Image 1 (cartoon, rainbow, N blue to C red):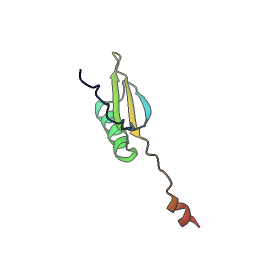
Image 2 (image 1 turned 180 degrees about the vertical axis):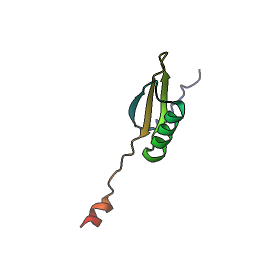
Image 3 (image 1 turned 135 degrees about the vertical axis):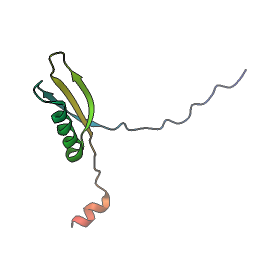
Length: 82
């Protein structure tokens, strides 16, 4: 009989956290205008495209996401604040 296999130790992997923003563009917004808007959001707001839905009537529902960066205070930072 073979001995039971031991499991490797668990490694905790933190998944990135995101914040989301939804935009609803009417059908009167051209494709080039929508592209310019999304490019601006990506460059200056650090947003990336998560989902785009094009409805039969021409509306676009756009979901953007960006990573939430959590900053942890180090013990040294409290020393430097004084």
